[in-house]
Image (tube, rainbow, N blue to C red):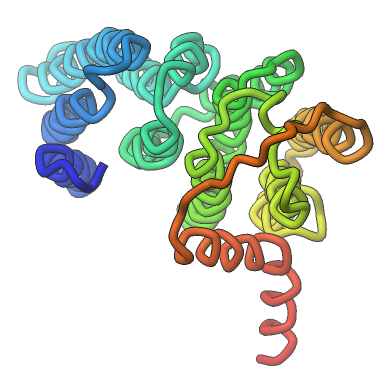
Length: 341
């Protein structure tokens, strides 16, 4: 990707678009930032050699254009209300803005485009869609004060993310449903405080990066590739599934820490019903991650007679192993620092 100068240009403009949205002080400015972000992300998605990525970029454009139109429409309504003293119910317009932003992110109940689109992307594009493209809409949602709609979206997102991933064999769809589940947690953390959201988002991005980085090196797209791969290196296979469990939020790993923070804050707020639903859904996601791990470790698979030597320089596996170390032992290290202070 970084060999292509136009891709670097579009990537820079995409980052600038998000920055404009986050720093703008009006809804129109935020809309402009989102449009710049969208128009620079689409060339990054489309690839001449791959028809599915072109299809995915078109799907992305249509859904985002719809969300942008609704957002612009509702911000104009807000402007009319403020400048011309027209009687309009403000909570209604805020709900329209909120729905448009939820559609932009791919949160349930507006999630239908997200797994289908992920199926046509390369891993690096998928990573950008799962992490960077969530920042601007989430920041805008934090400005709105509609708890009811947000709560409904949180509950639906965690349930859809858990149930949807149960029957998947494609790793990209698995990551997409996992992303929807995490999005529910992120929206909940946003309701608590922005700092909790920032911590959750940082850890989620880090863990997603490790997994997608590995999938990208070995060009893995389906579960059966995971099982029959890594025959010459059991360490790589073991660490990969450890990262899976960390992303799911299994306690001794780093992925549990942000969930722990959200659980703690929710118990302080007496939100036990929502918390129970979120934890049960996370247990379902952990179930299918564990099922994959059991299948990979316990069962015998066909091993190729020929070994495929993946050509990569020393930096890539070293970077992966360093990140994996923090993913597995991060919680211990943070606890250690906390006790030392």
